[in-house]
Length: 113
Length: 113
Image (cartoon, rainbow over all chains, first blue to last red; front, side):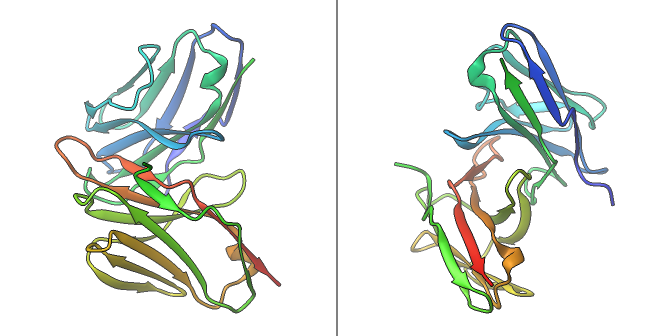
């Protein structure tokens, strides 16, 4: 079946601009996660959704980062006033629910110039 | 102290040999353990998960878990050049609303033809 999809695959933006990253989870998966991976920090957790609710937002690095999920499916991660340190690969994962294995999408490579 | 530790490698093994990858974790409340394979420029791919002490085999892969020693390993039998990748150990501690994975920094494996 179809895996997790993310768009865009690459995004180049200027410092100070806002960006939106999209994730479409595996059909039927109620849990959705955002992570980011950068050379210096490895793979870091950002936020977890169960359905449309976000019980764990503990990984969001600042109030410039926000995420929402609608219809228990697609999620959008928004970064406002982007900074160069936001440059990373943003990965979305989904699982049947919060207690099962997580499957990753292909990621969005964000470059802030 | 890092929560999930892996030898960064690089680890080189000849084709056909057994590759042994190790991971230790600090949180005794950790309940679920995962191995992901990541090729350069690609997203992590789930290859094994283990929830109970002991061994779990899937094809050429065996995951081993020892909760008393806080140790999890991955054995790759009959290693192939296509196994050359970075292997990420991930641990989930289901505490309260947290369902995130905590990742090690990865072990780079090279299988020499």
